[in-house]
Image (tube, rainbow, N blue to C red; front, side):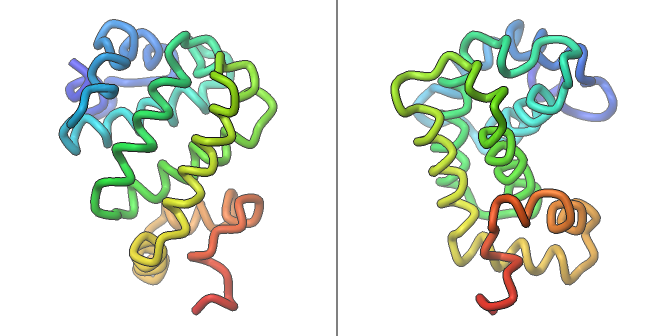
Length: 163
């Protein structure tokens, strides 16, 4: 259900939280070895919920958000880097910087741990290389990321001094 929901134009901000709930996302992503498709679709769903602006169920109103974010961060870190994974990790890291993320039911130190996990992932050499290649290729997602999120996150992939 989650895979079908994330494909095409089916999923929108209003339904994202409902899909996460009905698809039992928490159980699926917290499993020991979810497949890469599930991890990628989970990331997409989380970014939609983070950016829903109060439409439907947001991350702050999704009870297992902290567990799902933590599991996603852990699992995506085991996968090969891609432009899409880089962009999604950056979007989630940016969301965790916002005061709204404090309203998620986090265990002690959980928000900081997950944020640190995403930032560490985005700082890996191989992930920086993929992001830079996406920018050089004119990928609109990376161009948007550089303009909208990179300055506030201090992403090494886009700093002049690191190249």
